[in-house]
Amino acid sequence: MRILSEVVNDLREQERSHRARFRDVKLIKSFDQVSYAFEKIFEEARQDSAPTLGSWAVGHLQQSVDAFAQLLAQRGLSVDLYDSIKHLYKDIAHPLVELRKFIFKEPSEILSNKSAVVFSEALQSYFEQLRHIAHEIDEEYASEPPTIVEPERTTVPVVVTITTVGN
Image (cartoon, rainbow, N blue to C red):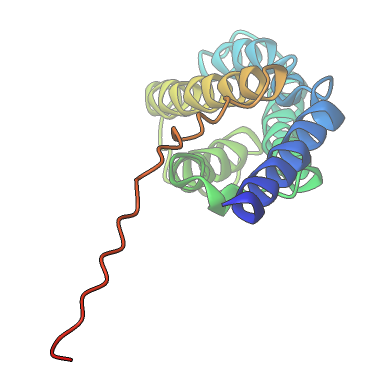
């Protein structure tokens, strides 16, 4: 029991140290200016802005998801480690590629400005979900690992009975 307790304490210390190392490295920072990028994408989809801002915006969104994956990797984590993140990355990939094509006037599945708005809204929803997950991970790293309650040690009386059979 003592050895197991030492192993548990060592693992807890490693986790505490790992969290402390990355406590001030916020994943949510990956998504700075994402709201502004979406604003510019919507303006372009509605033909209210110059194309250069839309091209910057789709590039910025790609940089944001890449930066998030890189920050996870620095922690020894990956996009594939979390099912929710892995699925969001797959959900983000398609509309982001198609919006990029649309904005750069390349052949795309997006055939109209109204369709571009729909793609943008879906993409924005996926980014909001990803930002929420990043915030939750940041909160987890900002806290101390949960304490482990050691089981109560109960002593069980041992009764030894010696009997003899025969002489």
